[in-house]
Length: 368
Figure 1 (spheres, rainbow, N blue to C red):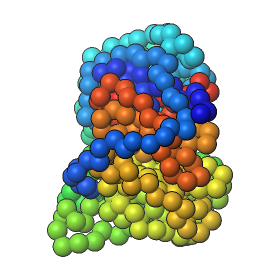
Figure 2: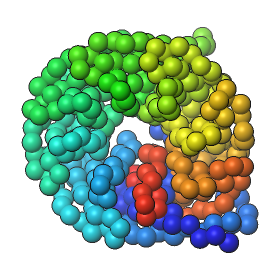
Figure 3: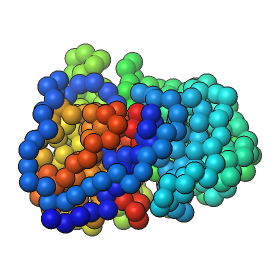
Figure 4: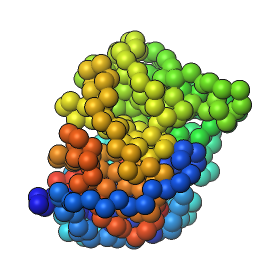
């Protein structure tokens, strides 16, 4: 049996561990019991650290230069050194947080429930704060001197990275019903890619906020507002000349990253984003299935159904494994080539909303 360094870097009550969970209801109501199988890998928890109050929002840890940055709903922001989990600093902001942690050249960023972006330097000292239009549900991300912020009211705002002053604004009208799992952003080659409510995917120029292109991952379908929810979930993923994204009650689709032309799509009700390796794309759906698709053309390679109903997080690729977490705080390793269950480890029994983060020491997750 191969032993894998997939150690949960656990933050309890806001835990860094190996696992995850869906951000919304729907899918299969019946949770599959944990399946008995012959493990082909071994996982163990390396350490865990509390970072504050529990939250249903799903904060995601950030890895930068062997330091983990984590945040919690009650305003805690913590920096922890790998590999041993030594705490470097901890600050407590007065405001309740709703998003974090994002990264830029000069430090890290979090978002508050009242719609403020707070910039901290790499030692935890506040640099600036800037008000936007409404609650921030996605970690702010910096690219080419601009901090990009997604707000719950359908806006994408570009702030000056040095002082937080607004540089540009893009806005779309939200459908009547949207998921709290707001689509995240990704940056590459001077463009910001953002998944939006209603199945839209936008590419915006970082320097001035001009729209480069806009398309649909999927179109809303159905006769009721619930049936017509088709929001893009998780972060778009860049893969060479393509950008791929997945939508709720919709599709997994890949497009030309420069022009937005459709490459291929497959029908999937996405739960929490996409991961990739050299050959395949991996995603989890709202039924609790894990799926693998060939990057060239979208042929399905395998589907793992034994975690059905367990409200899985988005996936991450770690060595020869695909890693997901579930609503009961378990972290599951699946064989990357076949989807077979390879190992699992329990954390603190709390759901994990954010996809695992890969480090040189193992796998990092944050529980809620």
